[in-house]
Length: 238
Image (cartoon, rainbow, N blue to C red; front, side, top):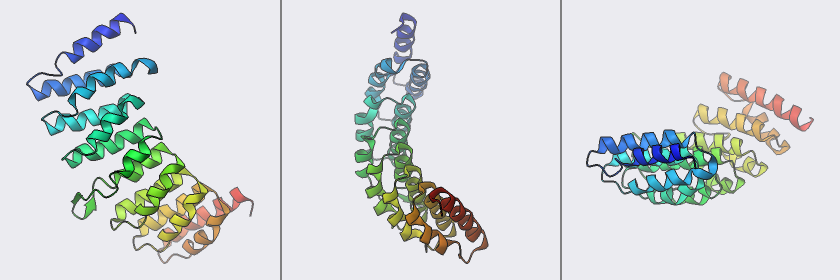
């Protein structure tokens, strides 16, 4: 590593143990910024510095360091994020999930599965569970499909919506039967994104489900579904 970068990293790290949490936060942000200019092989040096803060006494420091692992983007941050998944604060847990998506390593799938039963909710919405499908979609590995198969039946429509989007983003035909469970979802927004995901996957098994959605009682959902059906038929040669 270039000596100038080494100096910058050491300077930024000097306040990681400061009593003032604002200075610790400032150090996190500076290290993250520096990492963006580092070659991939040198980024573990920054990860190693940030790991010191995963048990910081200030929750806002922990949730910022969780996001930093994602922004640094190196797989060496996976084990630290796995530990942060058990944090008492939901803000830490959902940012750790989002960070796994940003890193995009398939090993993150197994880590995300461990929090599938996270029960933290605000106003009836599952704050942490909703980020699981988002992260799985960003990772894009078909190993995430069995997890999403469970989330399409989640009681929270926000989770079901994100699960539909994620199945589309992963794009594997094994996701079609799970999307089929959402074609009569009580929430129009979920049905709309189910239609889009079926077209995105681009497999002919999705045609009958889109034909069903094209007759939706909500005109806007029917139009989205008709457009998705036409796209899918072009893709599969119907």
